[in-house]
Amino acid sequence: MTPDTLLRSITSHADLLDLTGGDPFVRWGIPDPLTGVVLAGRGAVAVERWGRRGRGLWVFPHSGGDRHAVRELLESLTTPVAELGITGISLPQEYADLLAEAFELGDGGEWDWMWTTQVPPLVRGEDQLVTLDDTADAEELGELSRVHSPTGEGEPGTGVTSLWLGIRSAEGELVAAGAMQALESGAPHLAGIVTHADHRGLGLGRAVTAGLTRHAVAAHGVCTLGMYSANPPARRIYNDLGYQTAYAWHSRRLAGSSSTGRARGT
Picture: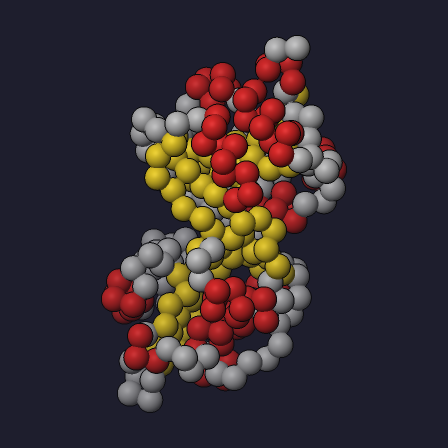
C-alpha cells in the first residue's frame, strides 16, 4: 500500500467531529464549514489551517490512534504538503520527535490551546474592571503591551477585538487589560492579557481573565485561549478559572518555507 492510499478526505465538520469523538478543539477551534483540506489516516488526521505565518496543518490522533498512527500519517503527508504549499505543522508535543523525523524544520514554539464552558468563580478585583475602546484607547493599550508584554497579541486599533476589559490605578493609569476576539470558527478567544510590571502579583490578570471569560461563556457558551507552555503561573490561573488543555502544541515552520499568511489564525 502506498502512502497516498492511506489518506481519505473529510469534507464535513460533522464527520470530523464524529471521527475525533467530539474533540473540543475540533468543536470550537476548527471552523464549520471546513475552510481547508482535511486528510485522515488510520488513527490520525491532518487539518489545513491559515494563520499569521502562512498555510499550515494541525496533526493529531483520532479513534485511539497512537505514535504509529501519527508517524504513518506524517510519512503520508510529503506530497500533500508540497502540493498545498504548507509552511508549518502543529502537532501534540509528545510527537515532536516524529515531526523532526518526517520533515526538515525551522523555528517555532510550544503552546497550549485551552477551553472552558464553565462560568468562572468571582475573583477579587473584578469590580474594578472597566470596558475599553479598541479605537479611543488603542494607543494606551498598545503602550501597555509593548512595555510589559511584547509577545501579546491583542492588536488594539485593528478591529479584531470585540471586547476590551481593563483595570486602572487610582491615578487613572491603565495597569491591566485583556481582549476577547474570535477564532475563525467564531468561538470567543482571549488574547493580549497583560499586567503592568509594577502591579503584578495583585491578581489583576486573573480578574481581567475572569471577567472576559464570564462574558464569553454567557454570550457564547464557551471561551478559548492560547498560552505559551512554559508559563506555570498562567496555567494555574486558567485552571483555577475552569480551563482545560485540549492540546499542548509543538508548532514548527518547515525549513525553506516563506510566510504568505492571508488570514488570522490561532
